[in-house]
Structures are given as structure tokens and as C-alpha cells.
Image (cartoon, rainbow, N blue to C red; front, side):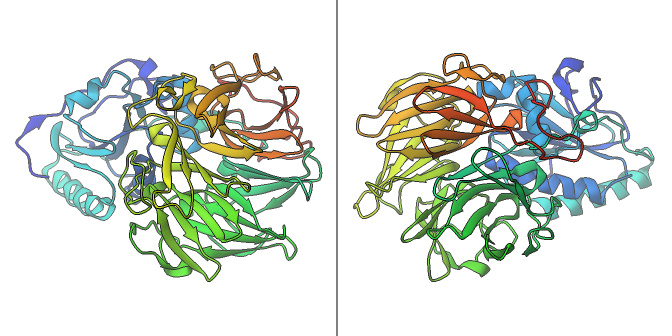
Length: 512
């Protein structure tokens, strides 16, 4: 990270652009070593950096060191203050964040990719930049050396800057940023990934008789329902016999199996650390995974939307975890299993009639299809490429979506959450036609008809008994959409509590 001595550009002095600062503009002050994290909250690579930043913040707590997030958003939806605030809370970001909507700071620091980390010296000079993931240990050594050196020179102050976090103003709702849902029609059960609470909630389809799976503490402990721990669980699949759940324990980079009869959680894939494997895989319990975001059960095993490596993986009945589709390169490439490319696939569903898999490929804002057994099994049904996004219904390549995260199949129709457009949409896989099914396109919280109902970054979606069950993430709720009447209502989870509140209060945009 050697570079000529260049003064680091100062940051915008506009309080409206700052979050996690108590409503004040945050400036680069003398005497503090700063690490600027250029990120965008849609990006899995940027999300992988967050645990590294937390590690550095904890390691150098009390010393004159400070992380600043510079959020140079990719999608239009990410440039809204409330949306960014929710992302900060959802990912437990505990440092000042600057909204760099016009890429001014990005350009000032000559940044070219997400994520990029920039060090600024206590005397205000640019020290260098690193792009991509995997720099935690190198940065820790570098920061330690720099802090010691500058302290000896007398250019550091004794304490780090003080700031107020958005989380300090928050109540804790009964569901907290739920990510995925799974509706079990036969068993009259609904499973909710209560993601920010690090647990799974199991209820009846009407919301009654809930049971909690997991203690709510962050961890990766196996054990019974009360002692097992998760870290930001996402996708859920039910075994064919209905007795086991398979859970994408996303931030732990694990797949967990939940024995619903014995009320026990066990790890069945992953090592608990993020993997980089894109080629071969191996025995599931010794193969590192990378941000498994969704999972689907099939007669041949399980398929996993492995967001972190931009692939679809298989968890086989003989206990292996292997890449099945996608080279691992981020992008939109159709064709053969080994050469196809995905971009942060975040939702996956099985069509039991055609045996096809449908994928919500979030970073290219597209819906993909995988037809096992074909020479070129991967195709794109609707949407664009990495920087093609918007809100346009239509056919095939003319369709524009914005970061879809969830998907399910009902009969011959594919339903999906057009997450950053705050809508539920439907796709005819035969024609490639996409239509808005519900939602106004504006973030909000209101039940009623499909034309007036509002969602707020809905992520998960599942189907049972003619109804769609939707994890309405930023509204901290599960919404129920009747396919025949196209009416939306909010599931009443009476009695379910977070640490501070119990249902039935409802939450609307701006209340966290």
C-alpha cells in the first residue's frame, strides 16, 4: 500500500448524508487512523467485509482508530435514506456511514470497485487502498503497526471518535428483518427465518401456536431448540417426509438440519468459515461454503443458492457439497453447467412438474431457469445484466427488475419478490412475460387490494392453500397474499415477542 504523500479529501459536511452519527456530519479529524469502506448494501462481497470490520473495531477498541462506511449505492433503491438505515440495522453496522449517492467521494478517492478499503493517516494523508475480500489479517497487522508508529511520533490522540448508533434508537420487534419463509401445506406449518433475531419461528399457517428454534444468540452451536444458535439464517427447505428442515445459516456459512420430531439442530454442511471453492467441493462437513442464501429440496437431494460464489451447489444424499451450476464468475452467461455464470443467486425454487429450477439472480436483476439433464441447462427468462435494472414489465430481455431475492412456483406460474421495487411479480416461463402482481412500487406498509397494498423490500416467498406467504423484511412482518382475491393481509403472530415488543403492533416505513 505504498503511495506518494497525498492529502486525503475531506468528507461532505452535510448532516443529512450521515447515519450512525447522531444526526451530525462526521469529519476526518486529526489524530485518528481511519479506514474507509466503500460499499453498497446489495453486494455480497461488501457484506463479506462487514465481519472483518467488526473484528478490526473490536481489536482496536479504545484506540484512535475509526471505520467509516462510504455507501456508494448501485441500485436506485439503495440511495434512499430510510432504506440505507434499514440495511445498517439489518447488518448490525456499528460505525458512521456516509451516503455517497452521486459517487463524489468515490471519485475523490479514485475508487473503481466494490468493496474498496482506504486507509487515511492521523495527519490526514492517503495511505493506500485495497479492493475485494480477504484482507482482514493484513489490515490488522498494518493498523497495529501504524497506530504504534504514529503514537511514537505524537500524532495520535488518546481516544477514538464518539458517535451515536441508529440501533440505540430502536425498539426490538417480534420479527426482526425476516429473510425467508417456507409454507408447509400438508403439515399446516409456516417456518420463518427471523434473520436478525438469529432464530427460526415455526407457527401454524394462521400464525397461531408458535415455537422458537434457536436461542437467539449469535453462534453456530448444535443442540436442542433452546440452546442451538444461528447467525442471520435465510433460506429454508422441508424434507420430503416433513420431519426435517434444512436451513441456510448464512453468516455462519453453514447448512443446518433441524429435527422437528426430536427438536434438535445439527450442522450438515460447511465448516463455519467462508469458503472460496468454486470447482470441486467435497465431503459436506469439511467443505467451506460461502453465504448460502436459499435452499430447495428435490428427490435427488438439495440445491443451494450459493450467493457468495455466484453458483448453485448441490447437497447430495451421500453427504457431499459440490458446485452444480455456474463457473463462479459473476455475470450473466447461459449455457453449459460449468461455463454458465450467475450473479449472487439469492432465491431458488423447484417446479415439480417440469423438474426445472428457477433462480432469483439478484445482482443482474434477472430470473434464470435450470433444466437438469440438458446439454445447456442454464437460461435467462427475464431481466438484464449487472447494470441493467429498473421497474419494467414485459417479455424476456426487455424486463427490468431491481434485485429480486425470493421465488416460488405455483402450478405453471413463477412468483417472485422484486425486492428493491417493493413488489410481488409473476412470470410465465413459457413466454417470458413478467407482470406486477401486487405492490405499488413505493416502500410502505398497507394491506388491502393488490393495487394499493404496499411492501418494503420483501425477500422470501412461499405458497400454500392458494396463498403466498411473504417475508416483508423491512416491515418486520409476514404478509399473506390470496391468489384468487389478490387481497393482502398481515399475518397475526399474536404472542410472539422480541426483546422489547410483542405482536400485534405493526411497523411502517421509517420506524425501523
